[in-house]
Every structure is written in C-alpha cells, then in structure tokens.
Image 1 (cartoon, one colour):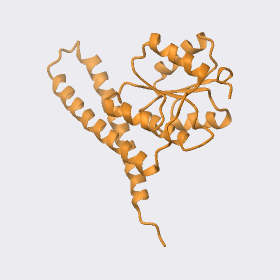
Image 2 (cartoon, rainbow, N blue to C red):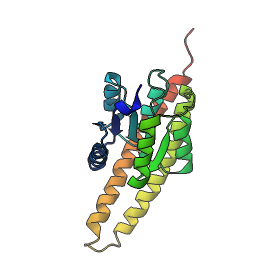
Image 3 (cartoon, rainbow, N blue to C red):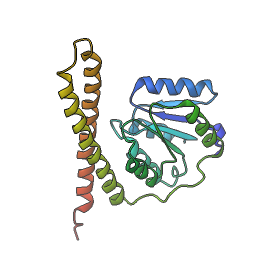
Image 4 (tube, rainbow, N blue to C red):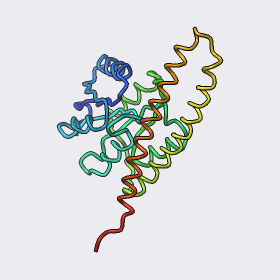
Length: 211
C-alpha cells in the first residue's frame, strides 16, 4: 500500500472536533474521510483501506478500543497505523493498554497541532514501523473491562464532587458548570453501556463449550 496515496480516516463522535481535524488535515493536503463511531469507520475501511486512522476512544456504537482490536485481529488491516486522541482515557494504564492492543501513537486532547501534524506526516509517509501481536479475545476483554471499571469509578467521584459544588455557585456561574456536569454524566452513561457489553462478551468466553 502506498501510504502517500491513501486517505486519512478521522473517527470522533464530537462534531466540533471532527470538523476541526477534517479542515486542518484537508488544508495540509490530505484526503480525509470522517466517521462518528467505530461501526461507521469499519464500513469505510472495508471499501478502501486508509493510510492512517485517527480515532477518539470513547464513542457510541463501537469505541476506539474495540475498533483497533477488530483491525489487529484481521491480517488485512493489521498494519494500518492508528493514532488515539482522548480527553478521558489519559492515565498511564490507559495508554499502556492502548499500546498493548496495537495503537501506534497516543495523543491527549485538546490536540496540540504542533505535535499532532508532524506525527501525521511521518505516519502517512512511512506507515507503522512495527505492530504488536494481536491480543487474544479473553486478554483483550479482561483488560478492557479493567479500564472501563476504573474510568467509571473516576467519573462517579467527579460527578458527585461537581454536584456538591453546584449548590455553592452563583447563578452566573451555574450554566457553564451545568453543561460540563451534563457532559460528564453523558460520558458515564457511555462507559456503563460499554461495560455491560464487555461483561457479556467475557461471560460468553467463559461459558463452557458443549461437547
């Protein structure tokens, strides 16, 4: 695959970020395709393999972790470099898990374009230099569950703290704070949904096979 002739697939459910990345990369001369979740991204990938994928982690209808796992267990898509962008999964353990499943680079949001654009240029020119062996299904879902459980606990603490603080704010300060609180609640709901799905997958993998 000639990476320079390929396209950049940007995957994020937040439209403002998606539009910003699309506009910036298009201005830099790249062919850009956008998707709002992992399922939508896979449809584009099946039609034409991208030279580079830039993806958020926390998304509905297949998040970034699941998307990368699907790519790495398929020999035809295993070598596609993937850059993760995240404002939620930023702990060292999150980054370590991302690298263990085959993510090429990890960048925290908000995106620093001075750091981001050279990485894109390098990966579009040279591709991924090496990829790790794909994790087994049980290893992937066990690690994934641990990351989700940790993130859910952190969100619960954050939301409880913010709800207490809300009562001490002035009326002028409340609207922006309430918007931030609602965003955190929405993220928690997304994590809870994913956790249910992951636990169901682990239950299936642990189920004894019928003889």
